Image (cartoon, rainbow, N blue to C red; front, side, top):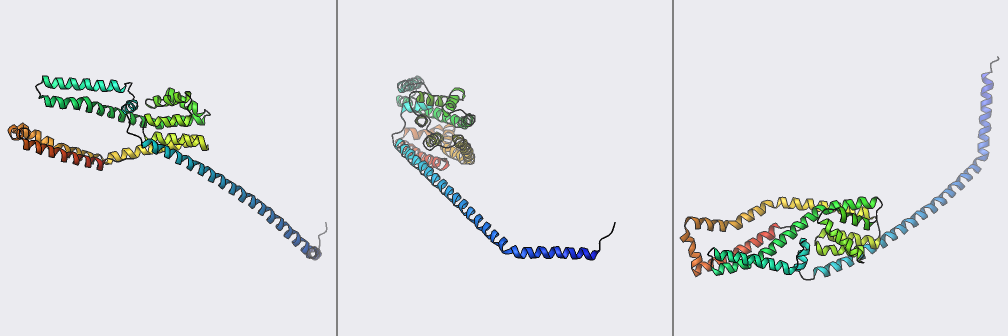
Length: 336
């Protein structure tokens, strides 16, 4: 084996480098021309791609604008219908009985109230009360107490509906995500839900079977359950039927909003409980003082009931106490 001379190797390397430099120098202009041509082609392609992207983005914005306008028009129409509905007279006795879930007709309800009032008036007469007091007791127990009981039942039923309604919406969301149509989801709530949501959704299904559309049937629920939450639900169904969209996502968002509203209502009620207790104590204090004075010195208090000037004092006191109670009630009641 013979070793190569380093000088020869250096000469060969220099010759190869010189040949490469010479070739690059001769082909440099051609290489630069090809690079420029390639860069121009790439710029043209990127410009076309950007134009396509801009055109696609513009079309998407136009589609979203049309969809937004359609939703706004639907909301305006629904708001007009709701304003017309709210401008009508207060709910009738028949509507109140329907909202309470009682299977009574207005005539039956009035007869029951009158019978209860007659019973209380007769009992007061037997106990030795004056006829004037018995007549007043008849009016209060025969006309006032039944209405108060009816309003109490309606309010309690509304609270139960608000507690169960978000859970029913969650069931509907899971049903729709699993592939069931909206009609089957409504039937599922009507069959397996909890009252009073179950009975109200059963009315929606029955209305649909009678020929009404789903948005119309859901809008009719507001007459039986006059709550803003039901109004939100009917608006969501109406908008989805007109403009389309992901109904399960909309109902899921509605369920979350209803839960947050209930939390806010509970928080406000807890924060205003001290003011309500103070108002109750202030309102009951005059009556408590009158009772204590009557128990200790009856003759000192009876002059208010036997003298005409005492009647005037009692009447003025009742008026001013009523005004104060109403003012305190408006100050501590919050609408959410």
